[in-house]
Length: 103
Image (cartoon, rainbow, N blue to C red; front, side):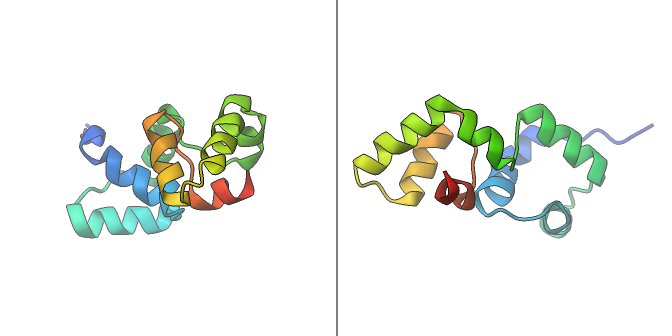
């Protein structure tokens, strides 16, 4: 029987690694195993990230008019990239610093 993992326990860390730090899945898997003994398969990570809506697909971000408008508003307020990422995260958008730069 496959092992059941408590993904929610590590969700915040995974958001940081994958979306904020833009780490690769291979890097994340190694770090999570070393730091937390958390060892799901690559396929399990992909499935969970898809379930959570984690994406690094820049094209889909440009099409999200609400996101683009929000970013323009935050830039107009002279907020730092880190603060913008935090605000976007609180509003439900999980994007990396690189994705923010490319918007």
